[in-house]
Image (tube, rainbow over all chains, first blue to last red; front, side, top):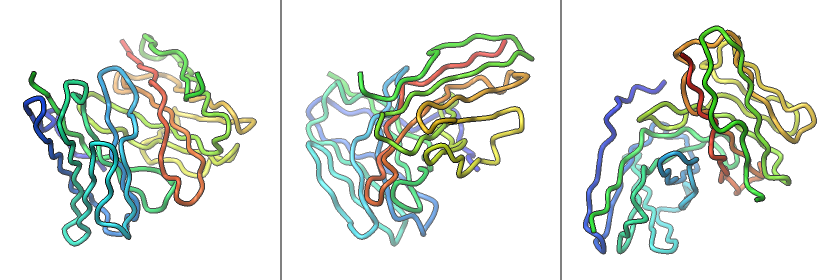
Length: 112
Length: 115
C-alpha cells in the first residue's frame, strides 16, 4: 500500500535549464512505465512511456531513462519552461494496457 | 471535446449521504478505470472494466463503493453512507486495452468534499 507523506519532494529550476526528476519503482516484474504531468485542479496528462526492453526513450524535449538493475526511472526535461511547472508522477504496470500503479510525485517549480 | 469527461466536477455532501459520479470515456476505448487521489498523493487504483465486465477491484474499495458500466460505455461510481475520509478527487481514465498501448487518458476528476 501507499505510505507517502503530504510533503512531496520539490525540484526548483531556472527557466531554460534542464530538469531531472527521479522515481524509484517498486515491482521488479513491472514491464511498462509511464510519466504523467498533473497541473493544479486537472487530471494527469501523459508525457512519455517506456517498455522494460528499452533503457532510453526520447520525445519532444523529454527523455525517459530506465535502470532495471536498481529499479529506477528518470524524466529529463530539456530547456525547462514556466509551463512545465506541475506535479510529475511516474507509474508502473505489470503489463501493457493494464492498471497503472503510481508513485508519490515530484513538484517541479520553474523560476523565470 | 472527445476526451474523458466526468460529472460533477465538484460535489459537497454531508456525512452519511450517498453520492454518484459519472464518467464518459473516449468512445473507442474498451477499458475504463477509477482512481482516487488525495492531496499530496499519487492516484490510487480503485477498479477497472473491460467493456461491461468489472475485472479487478482494489482492497481500498470498501463495500460502500460500487461501480458499474452497464453497456460498456459510460460508468458510474457510487459511494454510500459517505464518510469524511472519502473526501478526495475521483479520477476516471480510459484506454484501448491493447498490447503496447498502455497509456491511460484521464478526465479532469470529480472532487468530493464530505462535511
